[in-house]
Image 1 (cartoon, protein in one colour):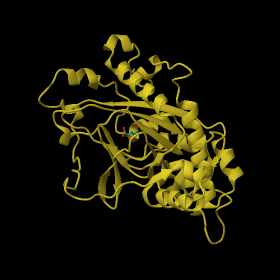
Image 2 (cartoon, helix red, strand yellow; image 1 turned 45 degrees about the vertical axis):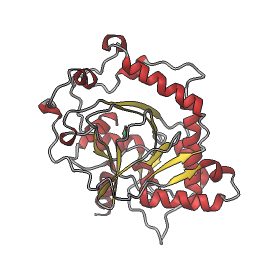
Image 3 (cartoon, helix red, strand yellow; image 1 turned 180 degrees about the vertical axis):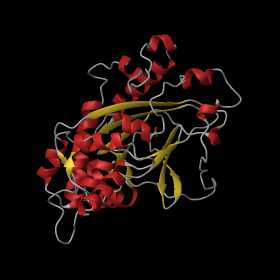
Image 4 (cartoon, helix red, strand yellow; image 1 turned 120 degrees about the vertical axis):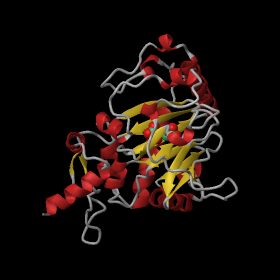
Length: 327
Ligand SMILES: O=C(O)CCC(=O)C(=O)O
């Protein structure tokens, strides 16, 4: 699965030079292997009033007197944007600040002290060397948040809540720290290529003030402007499949800029490998026929990664297979 994800991100599994070290050389141009064809420019001017991804107040959603309208806002955000920011999310500000400064300090270490560089054919790198103490570890809290959001999505979709619980119980949680150095030619490359995520739900912590995440909406790239202490959430392909296409796994990208570095921490949640991935049984029926096939989750990801379908996302693959099954 991870190979598929890397391929989709356009990185392949070739060992690349460490970009953070490269940036220290203050080159005037970027090395040819980083140049991307057709980097689509952001099609807005700074004077335009831009739409923003919706904001969901978790406190209101879980305990507020206005719960129903917040649930409708969540439903709308998942259907129309596939992205939203969460505030009052229960991960304490002091904890987030600690994680931010630890990760920044980690990236500031000399390369040899980071010790664990990415090896060819492997996705693990750096991250393995960074150990948080129990108090600094945001992950259990972020996991609780992910579970709360998935439960609320089930409610908004009118999906059986046990069916959702069975999917996320014993699912996997993966972390990625992203470091985007300043880039001398930001218009000729990406921090991260446009992609959607194959997972169920992704929670992103912006680790410094620099912006760079952009979301595809109505054929334009909408920049995400992180609210102070908010977390950014997006729907992955697995959740789009479970919702039978009602919720959207949206293409997004990270751009770079010439002056400032940017850091983020992404946490990816997948459904249980042993579960069957397909439109929720409690949602489909004569009025809502399945548009995706149903198959063992681990197996479908394996078949997908072996077929190396060029430019096809996991979601297209699952749709195509549905058509295959019919014929
Ligand atoms: O760093 C970001 O803003 C985007 C991260 C992302 O999309 C990813 O890690 O898959």
